[in-house]
Image (tube, rainbow, N blue to C red):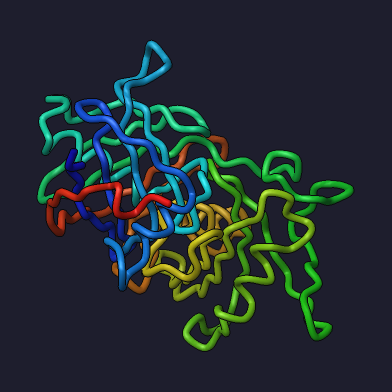
Length: 281
């Protein structure tokens, strides 16, 4: 049996999207790793799966698997592509849907020209909610890395955990060296996404993100939300900002105590079919 799939991306953060409402398949970690390989497979940052919801107030269930096969709670660029996918595949006629994820309900709304606006929910900051090992909640935390390097981080949960560091020039940050150390730091028991944010002015910033289980990606929606909220809390950014990533720009809006709104584009690259047996162990 051939499995239908769609290759999509949000600002270069790319996905293999599979409808498991009208067809059936099972994915283990090894199969996902083989599919994610950019030389021998489809190639993607995350596998997105559409399923029937478990919750009565949701339209769909949304599962996300990183390229290493690990399942994660949320993906901001992915949920925008998810909304575009279920509409294009005529799984729904709604332009505003409720999507069940491991971290709760998110509500994407389709706009014009492939743009999608998403209610990403409220950010969380306490160490237990990240999760992050700390004796008490602080504005910033000191994180000890290799070679006696100490960095200051903020921690934010946007449905998944993020560590945010303000840097003077994001283009000169050694993300390949620092990212894995932060991701797998002992103080993050479920690992973490590491964001490096450069403030341009109060309405614009640049960001690079090292995603857990993937590596540095061209864009990260939840990372942009987490970084923006972190800087807004410190008075470094206004309540509506543009976050510039390698793959393009996202608009983020947040008021203290409210939900985070993320708006950005989606793109469909191609549709295909494959025999999943060739990728299974």
